[in-house]
Length: 167
Image (cartoon, rainbow, N blue to C red):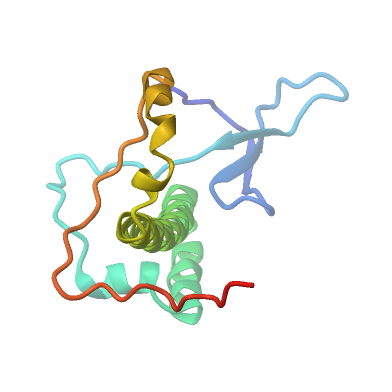
């Protein structure tokens, strides 16, 4: 698709199944082989339909099923299909990892918000603003960009932490 190169020799890249190595026959001594990404070629006149579920499950499922699928594509000797099968699996693995990281960050975010709400509640229950009220005049010196904070409204009773004995 815009990057067609005539080649005399082509083989699948051993380290990256999304690329091929090739020689055009016009190389000067010391040049080549060249490495190019390769993609599945559409079949003229074929109306694309969604991937069947069995095919999709082999793409994203167990490694043994994926290897069977990729080996079957190798026997077709169609480097573009091998490359796109490999590319799909790589991108799906990256997507799955990013979703897991996103879920972990969302849980951590919720935990920090919860702790902020609890700490705010303890400060309010301890009448902390009243105890340091002489500092109220410094409120005008706060930074312009406030950190967004929207505590969740919780129903129920607030139980303050146990008091420490004073010496």
